[in-house]
Length: 327
Image (cartoon, rainbow, N blue to C red; front, side, top):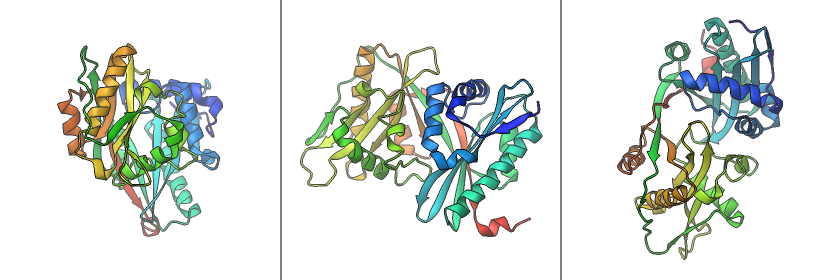
């Protein structure tokens, strides 16, 4: 299959893009959104200056069969993080996919130069069973850095009661704590180089303003009297997940700030979600965790989470001016 035309992605194309992602996720999952409202949210989060770094390919019938995206994920320790997405229908020719890949690299270099960064790191996802995609990335100096595990847990009839250390209280998500929750989120994920750390503009679409946000299943853990400027010790933001036949809640953001880790806070928040899920007739919880996060992986497995089969590989590559000069 060849591409008849290329264009930039717009929110108006959310539905055909979602249809493409549904087809590709069924055979080679990488965690792309499968509903039009989620795709629209993804495009909105990219920001207006990133519209030119998206590419939609259509076949001779006008059907969307390919999508490319270069996203600015922010700068950490003077290194610009850039996310690439290369999604193609299974029938798209290998040379078309390679062409899209090289376009993405060129756009990433331009983004690095526009941001005035001396160094950048590229990150992308590849399905575990996508041998051709993996080989394409390895040939272009990408290296496997981790596997992202997709875990599920059936909601039990009698979930355990949340147990909290003294001085902490479980609270519903409240707009009064929205900015503090964002700061707590970014602090909790500060040691994860691939994590999204939203700014004020992108935070709503990432969490409480997400079209599938579930406020009743989300919560904050507040320290009542610790003397710090931010009482948010831990957080859990849940989204409705319509990608399975079983009513499912996705534990989209789950984190604990460093001073409160190893205190059972994640277990307490998940216990609360299980109780709320049972009342809401939600039959399953789902989450993603990197296989290098051994404590979290061990905890989730202890709680009964099991592999769903929808995990994927994450590959990265350095992007420096010196690398540009290599043949």
